[in-house]
Length: 295
Image (cartoon, rainbow, N blue to C red; front, top):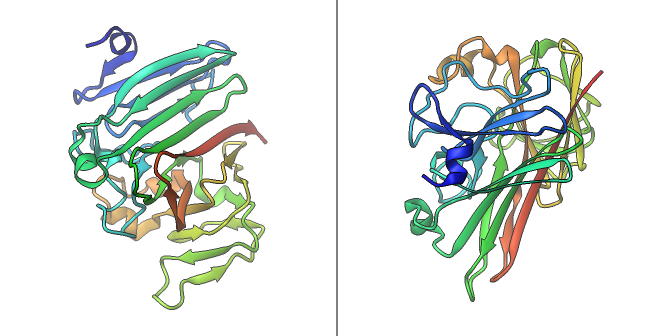
């Protein structure tokens, strides 16, 4: 075990390795699991948790973490020939370095070159994931994909499947998506293409929508906790996904408690409607920046 890993790594009760980053300038902290490089916790200086992880989450090698910020890559959902939601969320990543300076702390994670799924599907593509706690108390997550092919273009979809902890879903609204086109995956095929009519979207049933070409900033307003999340995305993530399983879907998920839909909502930066294309020798970088402020 390297000195870097020894400094930041711990093991949970299930034997799974995780890394803790703390920003002395803001007092905020986050936990990133080696499994999937999944950010499972983001707390402010008072210890208030901002991300949701299910109490029934299975912490096991090869199993995606139900909550936090799983990385869906190189495919979102079942839209393609790769495994559903890709394979990197189920893979073991390596901590490459931790950088501190300018009031920020950055953890750099890499998908190992000998990852079996990567070797099988995209052997000449390298993947890094940067997790930053900056001096303005933002959580910044950046996925970097480098195409090392000399001739072939690489194509993929993906998302940062971010689960937000909320006090009561009945007091939550999402703003910034009015007039946006979206695909409603709950509706029958042929009826899924919709346009968002509401300035403030509320959730009172199962929601599974892919909004296309959305504005750079979208907000989650959580009145019950008296706070709001502002989610900013780079143009490499032109889409976003809004998801809450609600009653029946929650019951059907083995790693999700029946009533936990009350306390979470997913708003995910994504590239889905038009897959990303990376030319030989080029790099694609998709960035999400999250601010959490009091109302």
